[in-house]
Image (cartoon, rainbow, N blue to C red; front, side):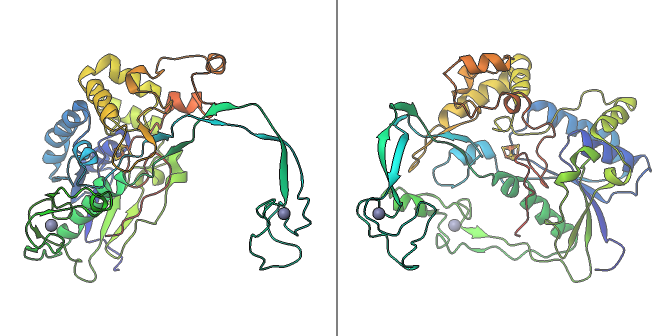
Amino acid sequence: MTDQPTLRLLSLGAGIQSTTLALLSAAGNLPKLDGAIFSDTGWEPAAVYQHLDRLEAAVLQPAGIPLYRVSTGRIQDDVLDPDKQRSLPAHTASKWYEKRDPTERQACPEDCGWTEFGGNINDDDAPEECRTCKGEGYVVTKWGPPYKTRDLGMLNRRCTQTYKLTPIMRQTRLLLGATTSDPTPCRYCDGTGRRIAPWRAKLDDHTTGPCSVCNGTGTLTRVGQPPKGVWAEQWVGFSTDEISRVSDRANTRYARAIHPLLDLHMSRTQCEAYLKSRGWTSVEKSACIGCPFHGNTEWRRMRDNDPESWQQAVAFDKAYRTGPGLRHQRFLHISRLPLDQAPIDRIRPSEWKQDDFFDAAYDAELAEQGDPDGCSPYACRSGQPTTDAA
Ligand code: SF4
Ligand SMILES: [Zn+2]
Ligand SMILES: [Zn+2]
């Protein structure tokens, strides 16, 4: 890499921080950007698209900064499409089942050598052959009363990579001069555009649908690597309160993330104040309408002020509950209740405890706040930075 970037590009999420970066560059307080890239999941609230239009017309265009809107598809449709194996990071719960916990136990009466801490004190390589304790080293002598429970979890977050980072990197390569291959027949469907998705074949469902690799087009076009020596500065809008999210894991040969708000020592609150002073009073948090990382504050705001989005989220939550081959149910709300029944109104923590409707693992504070910073392709809600494999 040479010292000077070939291009300066803003990863524009259209929230508080990246809007601040756009304004600072347009005003000449930061170097001039060569472009801003907005990766559209197709499921942002209307206010975010309106904000983006206004930002483009009032700030970016006059400053000569082109806005590139890129997309991998509409996340809310893809996730419900059985021919595409896409998912949102939903909260999961197994069916309720009855369980008893051991209350008393004693060492294995067989003198088998197994210990409860793992391993066999007589023989390092002993197979688990003790019939009495099954290699546990102890046997339970008394069980507690039965109670109902279920297993809770969270699906991995892959959507940020697929719907945000990958299209941004693809556009970055194009802007840096990478060439695209001519469309070649998709080898997954032999160019027909239709096939049985492998996971459906496994489930003995032989319905052919549109090919999930070429999206039913029958052809694939690849964006290659940019020429050697060229590279882009990717401006990422992390503010000082998010410093723990900064990572260089998304850096590639042709893109290097930089964090101008950190150099300017700007916090989220300072960004908000700066935007206000320039007439940008209400900047929406940018995130998918049905993002399971929303806190109750955001769910309430949606229910009370944006009923159209709320209806979409409620309908999606229902449709997303089960899927082929799934043992667990999926929920958008952390309480693992249907969204329109979920306790999104503010409740005191002491009240949570009285209500055995909810699981003990329910974290009322987390449920209230969700994630304050929206979905950034460089570190989405779950806190783990996302890396680009492209
Ligand atoms: S906002 Fe939520 S659902 Fe949308 S891409 Fe980010 S993590 Fe995924
Ligand atoms: Zn034993
Ligand atoms: Zn195909």
